[in-house]
Length: 507
Image (cartoon, rainbow, N blue to C red):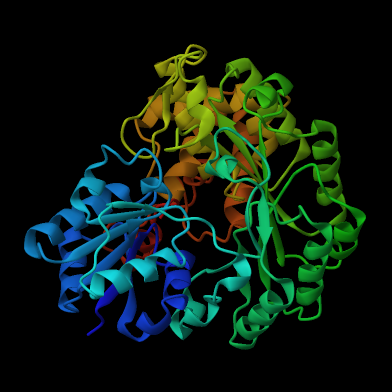
């Protein structure tokens, strides 16, 4: 039975915690007496508590994040009630700032703020020696990265077979974007490159083909980025998939030369645009050359096979609806494969709070602390924009509607898609859990009623999208368009087949 458990609640099963594996790798002599127990946020807190207590641990350390703090608080409360003697240690970004009044912190014995890679092991040594520190909150400093034992051997064979494998070539960020916790970093720190490449080689030899780099600034150092890309170019495999976060206005020739050599399906770039408004960029301390950003997106779209995922944020201080709409239209014109429309969040400790009073920003008091309204965007408008973001992800980012897309967006993408979004909510009262066939039927109506598209054009485009998407059912609009096609009788084998396909498009 391990005396120490490292635990967290991931958002989904296929996620894995890189942080827990760093802690385990750096436990020193206590490593043999330490184990990882990962869960997902949809599991019942009672079941999680039961699993943890079955190991009869003396110490449990939890990684706490904005997406799991509510559920983790319930688990910790149960553990505290059932096992008052259990020592509970918290760490992670959610409890590293503004922790004084957090319920989960009040329930815990100790909190480590900042990077706990080495601090957690030191704390456990004292706890097991019956020499606990007097202070409840322990501030950890970032250790020299070369001193850290790499975590990658603690990805199990099951992880490699079924979960995302996260890696990092650097930590930190030199930029000061006010909405991001990385604004608190002094700079970016690289891991020693040769040992890191050796770890990648071991993972590759074990069968890893999907690598998700968590670096905030992968392309900050072009030389390091080029070496990492060379590593994978030497090992090209039809199953290889690499995810990188890119600074949008930095794409030197050394990286371009290598990017063009990757085949389709091998590269995904997450590109944080956030806003095109220079005044808003200045207000939130975001250094971004919009001209170079546009040039780089155009180059990537024309000359590479990379999947381009671009981010925009709704509700930034100083950005009204017209400004966001202009930025959205500009980004749509650049045609990335996905546009992630996110709602501004006031993460604990993030410098965005300095604008709260000036712009009357009012945030949800519960996670994820999303903006509810401000002086520039009232509550009703924010709700519309949240639905816009959800419907866009469902329709615009799904890849299912390539033929219908020009009809949906026309020359005014934001205005038209907002009109469709308003219509969809008025017609359904929901923004989640749409069956695929129903979504097609709704778009058939929405294109005509909300956007004024000719019925024949709407049905022709949607029929082409339905066929090319590989779906085997028959939505209502296709049955109406082809009256000779009869609906299956309830209870027949046809009906059973259609019921099986009546799945929701959002899981």
